[in-house]
Length: 102
Image 1 (tube, one colour):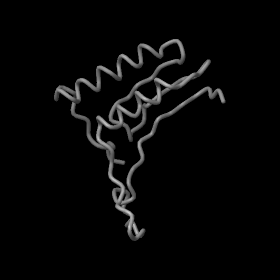
Image 2: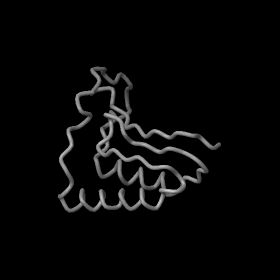
Image 3: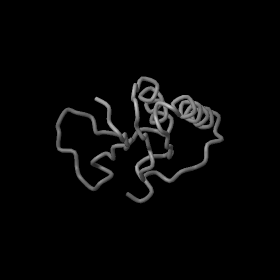
Image 4: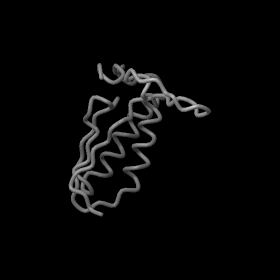
């Protein structure tokens, strides 16, 4: 499959959307941390083999907004993600409101 567009969204747990989790025996979902989202995004981008695709994480559900044309900008995107990971780990990442009011 060779999509022309890949958009990364972060799932919002039902409890944050005003819904109660009625599933017994299964722990409630939790919002992933900014670091976790970046780590998963990096893993995804690293393994994507796309021929002509716009990748974006520009959505209100995301902590970080990235945009790149793959495969041409793949290494640049990985570098930006790596920088963001380091900033989160060392406490210098910009503070981003969770889900921007979603």
